[in-house]
Length: 452
Ligand code: SF4
Ligand code: SF4
Image 1 (tube, rainbow, N blue to C red):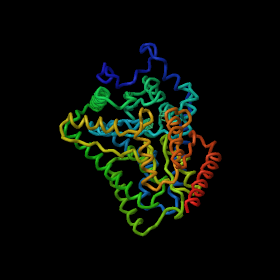
Image 2 (image 1 turned 120 degrees about the vertical axis):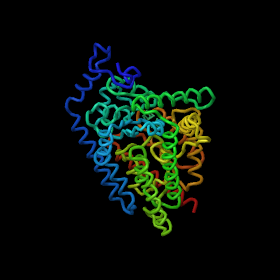
Image 3 (image 1 turned 180 degrees about the vertical axis):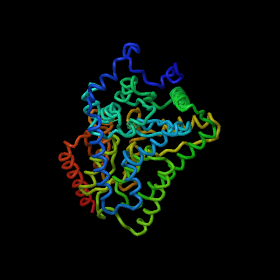
Image 4 (image 1 turned 30 degrees about the horizontal axis):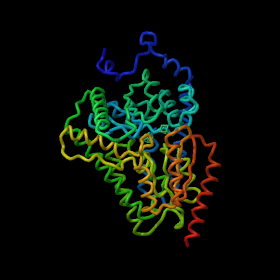
């Protein structure tokens, strides 16, 4: 028996009786029923359509072309990843922002975020999991894992799956027979030394699993290099955020795409291109040029992550005349907001610093209390010139829906316009969402008139 198998890094073989498994492979095969290629093709078509839409937005900065190209993941990025694998490299899929990518990188593996905004595989995932009420992000993720050649998913040698909610918790169980999955236990309360110790242990487990997968030891040198590489990315990201605050110089839809690519693209190249974009935008700020009309309402987007290529809500918000000026999304601003802060470059201190970075600043709704999220939103509204907040609550997600209710009421009580949009990955609710967002923007404009 191989070391990987003994340590659970290798999915069980296709012998249900011998392994005592549930016959997951056979079920997947019969549910996919030869339709995988069609679902992949339809998902790629959606990527192409959305990329085309982003490419044709007026006042698009020239530096955005790079990100739009990489967002067509099935093309350049998949080829690069395949080349990396052909050279013996290991690819590690990540299912959430809790994954310490520095450890993946330090082991010499390539981390790739498996965003799940694909509608075509949702029905497949739902049939396999057997829960129609589960959130579409997890159903899409399940469906993508069932299809043989789905871009990025099929390149993964292992998948790190944090469990912040029931849906993501069960993904590890449901696919352990067919995928090498590394589950991560996420504490729900962040306070106390025992929680911190437990979390550091979780980080150590990821380190050990990455070393076993790659056969490479994570050294003090490789860990430091990885931390510094991501610190440079954080710095570039903060610079872009600061530049963006100086005016409406970047569509929110473009910004969210760059955020999504942070963990999909090569991180060093991504950093370089974010800096290139900031250089360009600084000139736009000096020239006092805006992407939208000068009086476009500035809104903040919060709630469930927006997953490529499902740009439905950001598209609607900006098509009806607003600018997404800021966000409180783990798929947006928060993707790289907090760097690993290292006091001393010993191995233990670096691992502790990584553990702290991935737990304490997180505003994921899985935590209680989660006052940081409220504070972030209030600060943005007070300091950032935001005129209203739109919460995105994915159907089937209790955590985001409950937060949306509480935070919307809190904001309304403070006289700040707030709206909750419950939605899925399908396009069936576009008309209804558009009407609600239009009414919301009218309310913001009426508020302005009252103040004047
Ligand atoms: S909201 Fe929380 S659970 Fe969902 S992707 Fe973000 S960090 Fe992960
Ligand atoms: S949207 Fe909610 S239910 Fe879905 S994966 Fe994220 S936290 Fe879990």
